[in-house]
Length: 333
Image 1 (tube, rainbow, N blue to C red):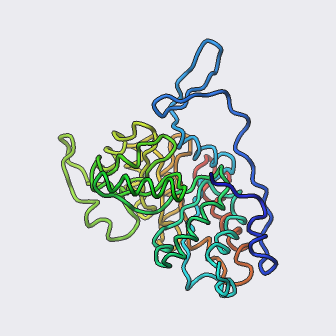
Image 2 (cartoon, rainbow, N blue to C red; image 1 turned 90 degrees about the vertical axis):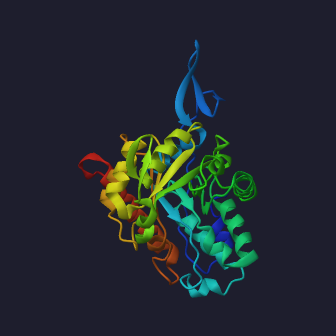
């Protein structure tokens, strides 16, 4: 399984970069004895028997990581050769070295990591190897989302799911809902793994299709709202989430109303100019949880110098504080 020891990045980077030393806390206190049934977690709260709890294994992992680190921040590990510090680029293992430093610097500040597979695929076989190594560096109590945007007919989706869950070790991946249920089902077949369905993306062109009117169950609504409703229907194991961009905060609020219990991945803060406060408040559930606010470039490329790791940590700290102030009454960080 995935495992990473404190100091792994420092051993990899040697002395050429200063990386903050972080102690990674294990999530929560000791759990009560439990069993699973149909993908749901059952907890033995009293000797008389088992009580059902409506939290899936996957959601439990995300919530545990979020509560342990007091964070809704998801950091995207999107390696761009043009922006990685030049002194790291001289190393043959520069991708893994860069990601290791970022993980070491931010692992106590995030609820998840999200590598975008496009950046690794662009590097060929070396990129694929670096991606697998990167997933292995993330501490086991922190979920990793593969931003793969996969989706196809059923047998092809099953192969994608096997590759990304079993070969690369992702906990969840981003998926196109367009192929329909049989194309999405292989990504939702396991209670400990799951999918975030693209619902309303953060790019300007997303409105070309995702805002088109359609009829669903006798009602007219934008297509993205039909996707949200379908995600709720398909969430039988509690492992289906949605992707809604921070650049469309009003639509995000609509999705949260339609899907009050689903995890929502919210990209688009930072360079894409999404309103952080509005998107946090629109995206969280009634308890101020179940939203993953994703930031990539503003964290991982906060500096191109030898202080890149410290700068990434400072940016992540500032974002976590801003997110926590937005989601809590009275603006408490």
